[in-house]
Amino acid sequence: MAKRSGVLELAVLGLLHESPMHGYELRKRLSSQLGAFRALSYGSLYPCLKELVRQGLIAESTDPDASGTRRSKIVYQLTADGKEHFQQLLAESGPASWDDESFGVRFAFFGRTDADTRMRILVGRRGRLEERLDNLRGSFSRTRERLDDYTTALQNHGLDSVEREVRWLNELIDDEANRKQTSTPSSSEALSLGDTTKE
Image (cartoon, rainbow, N blue to C red; front, side):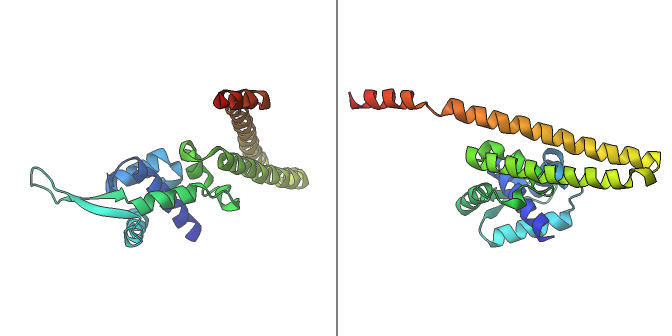
């Protein structure tokens, strides 16, 4: 539960970094944009919002209904401390950022994450899945003869999905490495750039 609440905090801060939102809009965005929260209830979201307000990471304001027919809505927006905390969360790249609970949410904010952190998370995630793949294959080979056709099909489906994600991660890691190479000047270019600055 603590791990999921940490992921929810990251997701809320990340979405509010884009723009202020009402609670209902925030919940819709969490479930549609970040699939990890499809089953998210208001019972989970609002305690998280209250805690973030208490910590001074987000602020509440009221959005009065112009027609006067409905209650005014509470709008949540990121504070300066919230923006700083969000950047600190994005800089984390340890094992917690590779697991099933948080990887998808972390990946959704890769556009705001620095290149080295992105690479560490991708490589960590790949290592985690390769380990899982080895365990699945070992378990499957030991139990294959005792499984019926449906269980075998389910096991194969699980293997296929992990193998697909490993291939996808390999492509992302290659892209990150190529992007880093093209953005870093070669030693000869760096020397020539240094020469021009002296002139």
